[in-house]
Length: 103
Image (cartoon, rainbow, N blue to C red; front, top):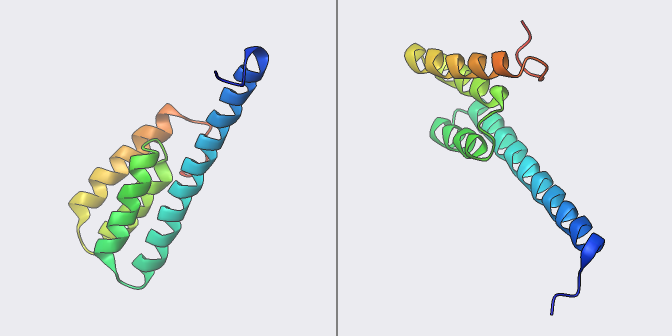
């Protein structure tokens, strides 16, 4: 039989949900930071891979798309940069109070 019941079960589920959120947030942040650092070193494929892993965790973080814009623009791939920039701007417009792009 499950040892957690009633109010304690609700608290347990809430704590578990919070833990899951924090793990995802930390993992997204780690992929983003690694992407930034290896982009600076010119390891483009791996940088893209890390940014995309971060986006897979949190597709509503406009900053991740801005990092892809910077990467693609720096590589001269302006079309992909524009595509990613449009996604980032769309997210920013939907969530005006978030950090990141400052209009």
